[in-house]
Length: 160
Ligand code: COA
Image (cartoon, rainbow, N blue to C red):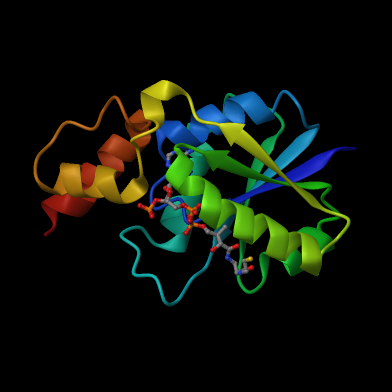
């Protein structure tokens, strides 16, 4: 069983993340999307909300599931007996940070490799922060995030 972990904040999940999942779910038998519980990063969506948005957005991918983690990613992937960590690469500027993270994780958990998937050119400019900022300022983000996230953003931002 080839199990991979796709970690991130996913605040919220975007079509860029879905694109990475659609590609990599063909390679692995099972993928766990691991949503980080990061107390130092101020999130728009709560952990439970992020998990629910991911669940609803990835229903078409049979071998993809969602979980949460805190602490070291290396510890989490070891407890799951994963063989790989998935990361998306959008532009060259992602590379340096990602390379350092991959090397550190390899040192911490040598049996697990990081697999990089290239983002589709439609999504290389997409980030969760950019989506939130555009939505907050009244921009139409419906081509960048799943419909359930569009609704979630509207509900969040109406209350502000
Ligand atoms: N499409 C669209 N957006 C993407 C994307 C893609 N393919 N890939 C990344 N992004 C966006 C994310 O939405 C995020 O946007 P934001 O900064 O506006 O929120 C941004 O790129 C950065 O993403 P990422 O690098 O995945 O950061 P993250 O905070 O989501 O997750 C962890 C980073 C969780 C993987 C990392 O911090 C971690 O492993 N933490 C655990 C502690 C640990 O083990 N530390 C040692 C690591 S060596």
